[in-house]
Image: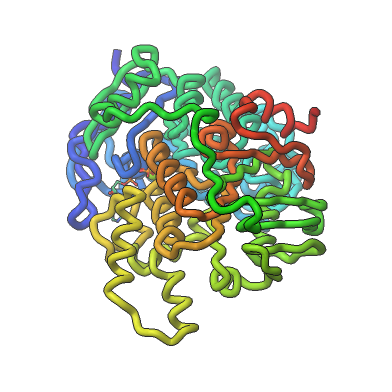
Length: 505
Ligand SMILES: Nc1ncnc2c1ncn2[C@@H]1O[C@H](COP(=O)(O)OP(=O)(O)OP(=O)(O)O)[C@@H](O)[C@H]1O
Ligand SMILES: [Mg+2]
């Protein structure tokens, strides 16, 4: 049988970087869910860019239903029924749901001045294919991020796509939201729409995938039905070989990572913190050398809590102490000056300057301080940038490459390296390993433990309970702005965290 789509011998270079080096991909038939996996920088997003007409290949062949085709633009790919939902959501926040959904059609055929009622009706038809009951008149800015993503998918469908491409659609979704997305994908499957998607979370790949392509260093190293793999063999295919790792010490037997005298003040002490509409009377203490996790659903107030401590969101009430000294969060500069570091969840908009070099981003915090202290730049800074990038395993052509040219996961590592190079006393991390591949994630956890062992206090918010259990000494669970539970990690389980995060005690 002729496969639905094949890519063969695809080469794509970016300057000196051989992002795709003879890669291939076969989507077997309509309605199939095709999973694309590989380590950070292995070429997944590049492959999807080629498939969706966003990137021109240097060499290679694309066949649809056995016929050679060549896409010169995303619009050309759309005409052939291939639609991509990008890693960054691209909805127009000031338009309604209906208008956003039909923007896709507008791309292909000219926006035809439909009446509002007709626009709503058509949009509703598309939304119904995903079993969504959003109000088409609602402004997209009022939707949650997962709902915006659904609107984007609906937009792709409005163009009668046969192949829907999703680059890490689940990386910022909670478990429930992932279920919603997968429900929509299953719905599309029954309508014969194939899905190609990238994710670093193995359990969900196995939950939904039918077939898999594994990329390593720009080459396809495996293509098979997903049933031919288990998580171990899949990681092995990705990495090449599984490096012998020291078995992880079980939580209980690990020496307590709290350092310093017991009467020493904690690195961070927060009392009665309030943020209007988000955080209600939260107390947190993080000892030196301690890693404290925050679990909770999206909207529980985790991000707002970290933002308020760092001084990028106003505190309505409460006090903060650093090493026992009062601290009034007001501006990031002051916070940094006092030894606080903050990794926001969305590196693209807040964590990094994409046009600036890797070196510039990593040393940015020091540069800010130097401007204040009026001291000259030093070679030591470059060395510390290099060391921090090495420690995080950042894969980049050079320290001078713009951060925007790195793969998504490598950008995340740079965002972390930026704080490690500075050596803060307290680090506030929001989703520290979002978009990072499975192998690199374990390494980042090791790094964070090493930082803690040096006496830094870490407060880590994550939507992945598995990550919190693996990384943290204690876990706080937030529900509707309050801390509803505080647990020693050794006595807590994922199901328990899920239960508590849902407001059940
Ligand atoms: N626009 C670009 N300019 C320069 N280099 C690029 C560009 N886009 C990608 N690259 C390089 O191509 C390689 C593959 O990147 P790609 O984004 O495809 O990786 P990926 O598999 O999607 O990784 P991740 O899991 O981190 O998202 C990387 O080395 C990356 O730095
Ligand atoms: Mg990518």
